[in-house]
Length: 206
Image 1 (cartoon, helix red, strand yellow):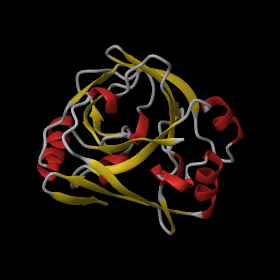
Image 2 (cartoon, one colour):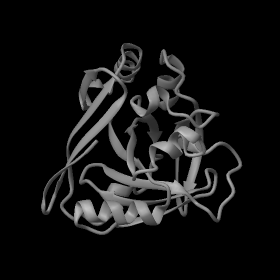
Image 3 (tube, one colour):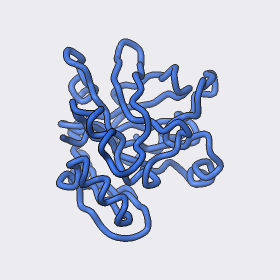
């Protein structure tokens, strides 16, 4: 079990990429489109994991509710004043067992593609995020796939700390996944915060 990546959402990819590049001081290293979800993203390597800014693709239809609650009025209102850190993802090769036993509804395990990449991950049918994003998405990269942090250019960014504030039910779900040791857990209203080391110093999100 390890952190796979951090997910930031934006009203548009152009806004999100510009906002993130201004804060980090480095350009995005990659990205692409997700036909199943009608979204597109920009990516940055964090060394042993990565981060993305994701947004609705205005030129794509979504055959199902988009992930991360991007179709919902609540998320649109949340993003009205700028991009936000909305959830995190953990990597496991035991995704089916973890989903089946978890006390929280993590969603169904779907196969998703982006260009030549493919992977499996948890998505709720309504597109909403467990624990309002504090409970991680579980992702499974198949053997032989070069994962984003391996293919993206290393520009000196590193994840120093991920704080997750949430309730008892959500903390139990995180612990059941075995992901509680990857983060700093706090009791309170749902919130995420991350510290990223950049070439220009430490940047805090959230």
